[in-house]
Structure formats: C-alpha cells, structure tokens
Length: 237
Ligand code: URA
Image (cartoon, protein in one colour):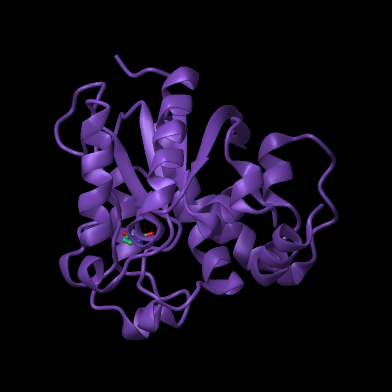
C-alpha cells in the first residue's frame, strides 16, 4: 500500500475502505476509534442525489467549512458517460457554487467543445464535473490529507451515482488522490488506470489541470493527446 493512501486512511481513522469496496484482500480489524468514520462513509454511501447534495451543503466535517462561502457540489449530467474530476473550488467557484467557472473552467469548456462535449444538457455528450474537495481551501492552498479523507465519501458516492463509463481526472493532486498513488502526472498520463467504486471497475484517464495549462501552453498538445486517449477508452454516443 502506498504512503499517500495510508496517510488518508489514517486521517479517516479507517482500515482500507477501497479494499473493502474492491474486496481484493481481507480488511484489517477495525478499531472502535475508526467506527464513526466508517459509519459516516457507510451512511453517505446510501444517500440519493438530493440527500447527498444536502449533506454536502451542510457539511462541517473539517475546518474548510469555516472559510468557504458555500460548498461546490458538482455540475452536469447526473447520468453522464464521462465524469471529470478536479481538485477543489477556487475563489470564483466558491462565490458561484459551481465547479470550474473561472478562467480554468473556460479553458476546460473549450477543450470539451473541441471534442463535441459539454457540461450542458443531458445527452451522451454531456459530462458531469466534480472536485475532490467540495470547499475552497483558503488562499487556494493544497488540500490537506484530513480534508480529502472527510470529503472522499462524497466523491465516491457521486461516482457511484453517476456510474460513468470513464473518468478523466485533471491535475496531479486529483489524480494522486483518486488513484491512491504518489506517482508523477508525467508517469500517470498516456495509459488508462482502473479504480473500483462500489464493485464497479471504471477506467481513469489522467490529464493536466486546466489551470496548469493556462501557465504552460506548450502542454496543451499533450492534453489534447489525453482527450484522444480518453475517446479511445470510451466514446460517448
Ligand atoms: N480548479 C479545480 O480543480 N476545480 C475547480 O472547480 C476550479 C478550479
């Protein structure tokens, strides 16, 4: 097990929840101290869309609730074939309550448009977009392991409810969190990975974060290659 995922599980006070879901090995014996986190994750895993949205909106599980303007749940087609996952809301998302509405979001929309996809509508070409964290880290600092641990059950439930045929994960932080790895984005790109959510194997394609692309135009070409790879793994139609 890699260090990053161990750190996350420890922050949750949990044995390996991914192992429980994926059932690849036997779970470790659960301590009494871990029960509340397990109970919380299990309760979240039973919520429907409306309940999940309400739970996120009222969440006070970590200190980010003290500085956020509002939570940023997710947007798009709840039955999308493609689900896109970013890191955390920035200032504009915190103000508007929707993921990727700032400059990076406009680039993301343009990238999606270039392959005929969009966050609008309810067609097979309509994606669902969410973040690892539902609250803005102050000053856009990096998310902390305990924040990710508290928010992870929300994202897992969103993935389970959308049941996408493909996940595109954007940026190093989201890729490492979702895949449970410390590997660099360069080494993660270029091939599909697989995650198991609630017993479903889902392919994951890793690409650069749009905010990174705004600063590193040269890598836009690589992100185009990533979208082409994603289409090879699953074409929505
Ligand atoms: N960056 C992200 O990762 N998510 C957003 O919603 C906005 C910027």
